[in-house]
Structures are given as C-alpha cells and as structure tokens.
Amino acid sequence: MVASVALVTGYLIILAVVAVRARAAREYAEFSLAKRSLSLALIFGSLCAAYVGPGFSIGFVGKGFQSGLLFLLVGLAYAIQNILVGLFIAPRLRSLSNCHTLGDAIGQKYNRTCQVLAGVISVGLCMGFAAVMAKAAGVVVQDVFGIPKWIAIILIAVVTMLYTSFGGLQASVMTDALQFTLFTILMPAILLFALFVPLHDGAAALTYELKAATAAGFRSTSWVQILGLVAAFLLGETLIPPYANRALATRTTSASRNSFVLAGLFSIVWFTVMVSLGIVARAIVPAGTGEDDVLLRLVKTIMPTEGYAMLLVALLSVIMSSLDSLLNAGAVTFTQDVVKPFVKVSDGASLLCGRLATVGIAVVAAAAAMAVPRIIDGLLICYTVWAPAMLPAAVLGLWLKRPRPLAGILSMITGAVAALVLQFVWRDAVEIPAILLALAMAVAAYLVGHFLSDVFTESR
Image 1 (tube, helix red, strand yellow):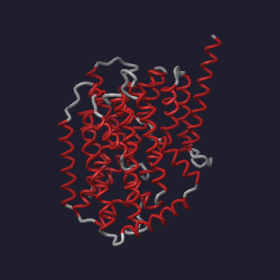
Image 2 (tube, helix red, strand yellow):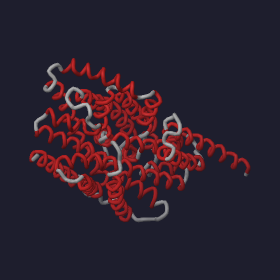
Image 3 (spheres, one colour):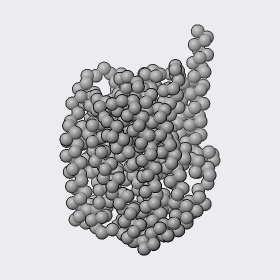
Image 4 (cartoon, helix red, strand yellow):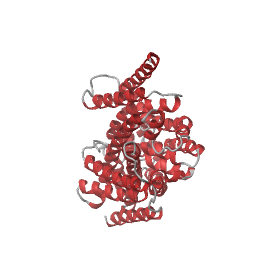
C-alpha cells in the first residue's frame, strides 16, 4: 500500500514538472494548436496516448477475458479508421488555412451556423468522453488511496485540469509523450510476466483459453451486434476534437498524414496485447470477475506489491493522457466555435476563455462520471452520437467542391437527434444497430438538404 501511494504520488509530481517545463501558454495560438509547430514524433505519441484510454486498456482486457479474439477483430476496425483518416482526411484538414478545430473547418466549408452547431455537438461529446475517463481514473485512484470514488474522481479531474489549462495543447502533448513511453513499456511487460511466471505452460494455457473465450464470445454475440460494434469502432472516434486538433497542429501536411497511419498500425499491436492479457487472466482470475476489474485483479494476483503499483501508474498515464486531450480540445472548440462566431475577442481574452472552458468541462465531466456505466458501454454511447451527428457533414464537406449549408445543418441535427432517441428512448425498438440507423438518417438528411439547396437556387 505504501509503495502504491508513493509511486502514484511521485508520478503525479513528475507529470506536473513536465507540464511546467512545457511553459505556460502565453498566446491563444499556443494554447489551441501549439503554433502548429509539433513534429511527427510528438503528434504520433500524443495521438496514441489520446486514444489509448481506459476503454482501450481496462475495457479491452475485460472484453478479452469474456470474448477472446472477438474484440481484437472489432479493434481492427479502429486501426483501419486511423489509417484511412491519415490517407484521405487529415491532409485535407491540415491544408485549410487559419483553422483551429473541426468546427472551424466546417465553418469554412459551409457557414457560421454550421460551425456553431458543430461546436456545440463537439463540446457535448468531449464532456461525455471526459466523464468516461474521469470515472475510470477514479476507480484507480480509489484503489490506491482507499478514498470514496467521488473524491478520487474530483482529485484526478483537478490535477488534469490544472496542467491542461496552464499549458494548453503544448502541455497536453508533452505529458502525453511521457505517458505514452510509460504504458508502452509497462503493459507489454505485464503480459510477458503473466505468460512466463504464473503459467507453467504459458503457450498451451494461452491457446486453450483463447479458443474457449473466442468460442464463447461468438456464441453470446449475434452478427447484428458484431456489425454494430465494428461500425462503432470504425466510425465512433473518427475526427473527434482531440484527433482533429492534432491533425491541425502538425508542422506539415505529410506529418499529419503519417502520424495517423502510424497510430493506426500501433493500435493493432496495442489491442493484441490488451486482449491477450484478458485471455491469460481467464486461467488466473475468478470467472465471475467484473469486466472493468479484470486487469487490476490479474496484476494484484500475480505480481508483488511494487509491480501492482507500477500498473497503477501505467493506468493513470493511460487515462490522464486521454482526459487532458479531451479537456483541451473541448475548451478550444468552445472558444473557437461557440464564442468567437458571436463575439470579437482579443488574443488574451481568447486564452482566458479557453482556460475557463477547460475548468468548466472538467467540472461537468467529474459530475457526470458517477453516472457512467461500464467503460466500453460508456464509449459506445458516445460513439453512437458522434458518428451520425458529425461525420457526414465533416467528411462530405472536406471532399465536395461546394457543400451546401442546409445539407450540413439538416445532417447534424438529424444525426444527433436520431442517435439520442435510438440510444435512450427507443433503445431496442429495431434490430439494426443504433449507430448505423442514425448514420443512414443523417446521410439521407444531408442529401435532402443538398438537393433542396439546388432547387431553391434554380428557382431564383
């Protein structure tokens, strides 16, 4: 217990020192996009750190424990998404001049109304994603210090909010680099330890559990559910604000493209390690262990106290790297897409607005964290809303020569409303996964808006 407290406390202190070394943001351009000065290596590490949150670590270990390779196949959809974004979308986004956010890009392609609407949706989704991260971090901190979960959530939200509001994107990326290094070393090391120390016949035991878990996973999951999961991981995090901001913050268009492609390839390795940990846990952890508790129970069972403490540090680095990215992206989006279209503000006022928005989003996320279900379930809710609400307007806007504002407005409103209704009101009303049905409705609304705009133009 003493070792765990000491290591976690020391990690938080080191994180604060790294954030301070990153310098306080003195200009809004530093706070929002680090003056577009970030190298390929930094963006790659930060992008990986941003997406490897609790869902892609704790959640995937739990899914590997329950369903074997099923979720590794689902994770491959996410890897494909990153590679496709790098090849076809990130370069187009980075080529836009004077653009700070995805909403800013939508505003340039459509109009101010579309920008504000995109900004509101983006900030709301950043709060939702941040609530999932805060809940997961609270679980880890609670386990270390033995304090109530709500106090643990507030503690982690305050620490992350302080260094993110202090240094902006630069501090987020610099701390992400530290966190990326930590968890890419520690998590594979835990897998190797689990394979060769507790299991006397590691390869044979892993093969047996892999077959049993995968067969159980496919038996318990219908093909419609699998289709919905693949769609969610293929589309649900495409161009969410933290990723869009990193695409815009690179020095060059090629760096933007390559960082996403490399991050997609890294995710394949990461998902393989996490699912493998879950499969190994089947031979060590009791069968009734909760999905989100598998990783902690596994390491607590097989490793000495110091090893468990190192896992807690790795998990905190995983979670806080995602949380700080969401806080910064949400704050920049609020300033750029919700405030600036209506009020002309100076650079200093923009910086202050971004810092206050960081605090506000952190407060809302901490308050909502207690209502978050299991980690993967929380992410899937966010995915189901984001993809229909934003992707048709964003992707088609970047590719069409003259996108119509009415199409963007109808698509975003229809996608958001349909996703919320199908997710919370008529959850099991139809067999089709909610994300696919809402996405189809959003695309249809976009086409209607596009052709109606042409009709109105011709009638004049």
